[in-house]
Amino acid sequence: MRIQLLSDLHLESEIFEPQPQAGAELLVLAGDIDTTWRAYERFAGWPVPVLAVAGNHEFDGRDLDEAGPALRQHCERFGIHLLERESRVLTDDRGRRVRFLGTVRWCDFDALGPARRARALRAGAYFQRVMGARRGGMSFDAAAVRSEALLCGEWLAAALAAPSDAPCDATVVITHFAPSLRSADPRYGASPSTASFCNADDALLPLADLWLHGHLHCRHDYRVEHSAATGATRYSTRVVSQARGLAGKEEPAGYDAGKLIEV
Image (cartoon, rainbow, N blue to C red; front, side, top):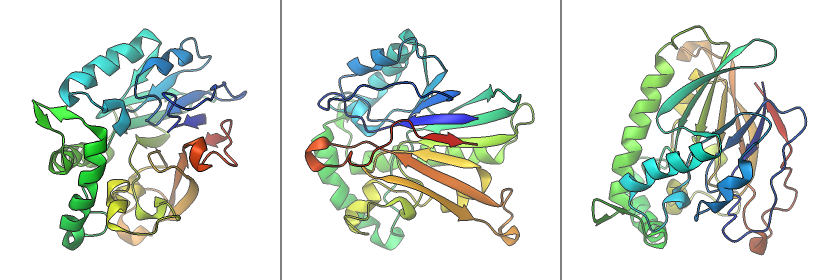
């Protein structure tokens, strides 16, 4: 299956017009498309199916429990299938069945190890204040993010370990947050704030053929090799991020919105 991947378009402020890529069989939106949600209308009538996960900024200034269902309904109006701790199986033009597992997969602040969690939580508090989200009338602060992240992680681990209802030829994970420090932004290195962008889901990588993510405003395309000694079901996993980022920071330089990722 040939996949076009878009994320971190930030169309609430950026000027960019998404276009379908010839040859694509699926469009994946990996979050932070538009904090206002208005730009989701641009994907109505897209020539191939569209799968999406929310980004953290889709919840800016909103209540998490209210915004989740509301965003799902909003996406459905335009034919977009929003995944949150859900799976979906699609068949490609060769008749291969591909399983997609999707979740925001909020950060659990353990990317740098449990011993550095407290510092990571303190660094993450800044991002949560900027986000201004709530849950049940309370601030959706770093501790609340961690609690939600643990639920996402538990679901993802169980879903990857469980067989699909029918045999599938490939498994693709879609998250907004990155699954590994290998996806860290090289501009900033491994600082406590890195744990607000990356998780340490490296042990889950061997259970997926492809992992798509966003969140960091840089692009990645790398393979993680696996050893049979680890019980891996794949020889390697490809990890891809196609975040566009912010023009004011010159982050879209070299961006290829039409890149096709094959699984």
